[in-house]
Amino acid sequence: MEETLDDDDEILLALAQELGTLPDSSCSTSLTLSIAGEFVDLVGGPLNAYHLLSLLESLVAVDEASVRDTSMCKVVRQMSPEHITEHFVAVVRRLVTREWYTSRIAASGLFQVSYDQLPPATQAEMRAMFIQLCRDDLPLVRKAAATALGGFASMMDPASATAEIVPDFLTLASDRQDSVRCQTVENAVALAALVPVDVKLNQLLPVVCAAAKDSAWRVRWSVGNKLPEICAAMGPDLATSVICDQCLIPLLGDSEAEVKTVAASRAHGAAQHMSPAHLIAKVVPACVTLARDPSEHVRASLASVLLSDESSEVRLNIISNLEKVNDVVGIDQLSQSLLPAIVQLAEDRQWRVRLAIIEFIPTLASQLGVTYFEEHLLEMCMGWLCDVVFSIREAATLNLHRLAQHFGVAWAHAHVLPRIASMHVNANYLYRMISLHAAKVLAPLMSSDQLQLSILPLVLQLASDPVPNIRFNVAKTLETMAGQLDDAAKQTLVGPVLHTLATDPDGDVQYFAARAIHLLQQH
Image (cartoon, rainbow, N blue to C red):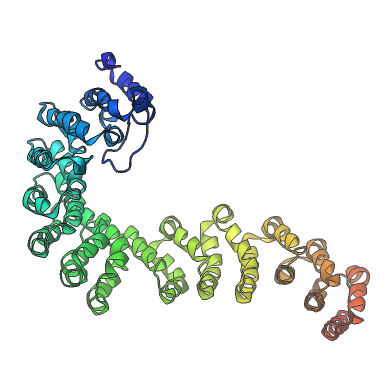
């Protein structure tokens, strides 16, 4: 296999793939091609695993990124501490000192691999080599080192991280390349768990606040994206007194829509670490301003956060005003950004939240169109008919009435009536009851012929139901339909059923059947 290393990149990629694609989430590279498991066994097990390092060392030095972005992680972790010190560290030394930059980039992600198994003197050497990469002349190498800094620091003892890594972290945080500075916040969060309080307060915190005001919007975006983690790392006092004023508020008012969008989406997580009084005084006014932002992406992000709030009252308030939210963010953003949250709230544990969603569905459906509605919302609407709360089931039937008004009777006949018919024979009497109610609310939308062909048979079918409540609701439903039925249907279908119900053993059934017969005779 080593003889193929001078071949074209396509051959090298095929070689790497043949060695096995086994993702390793602990490695910092984008594609992990590791020679683990089978190949370690083929060379004689963990005791001989170091023989594979030479091949991997050659692969990481090639120009093609998909071949270069490889990892020795799984092989090294199967090696003994003695072999790691003797063979793996030697590989890292060679990669760090090679002239071609791709080797140095590949080396950046290897320092944290089995660092804790090395003797103290070798650990010190590894730290020194890493610092050398942090000071490399090429921005791509410094970026790779900055990307790996937090993970490597987390493997160290606090004293070494503070004395040796923090100074170079500060240098990278002020690097002239924004691609390097973009790693600042994530590294600050990792270091905050290691360094003393005074270092966190006097060195890390100012760097984070400076990143929030960086001239490059991608750096500011990286701060907004990590706001909850920053607040957690700095603690509630600093989150309230410093992070809120110097990071969150400025980012919510940033000149770039992308920065405001990500800050709005992370504001809820950051707010968990801040005092309520400060939130009311500072963050709420900033969010009010965001609600009027010219960017629909920013407004949609803010609405999405509120729809996911832990408080049912907050969720209910937003849902109750979804029509106004729609006017603010636009239907495109509503369907793309907010619809997933709306669908999730359709199963909210608070029934009033579910009820508010139901009441908004007809407005949403009218703007999204019938095709989109059938693909994304129809099943949800039919599912509400089986909700455990009666108010939800009742609202769901009225929702079907409004949908049928908008999409047409033909649509209701094709998509709604079959589901109602299936509920008619359900063993649960509540399902049979709500199917009867649905038939009752849909009936006024239909012509006499449509009613007698589709709705009337379903109603008459339940006249012999064993549950008295259903039988007297059949009588009430037939009473409301009286004006839509022709004489033939009244005499041959409805009349006999009502007379049978009028002799029912249950007094309520008799009463409503008699009332329906009286109304039928008047028509």
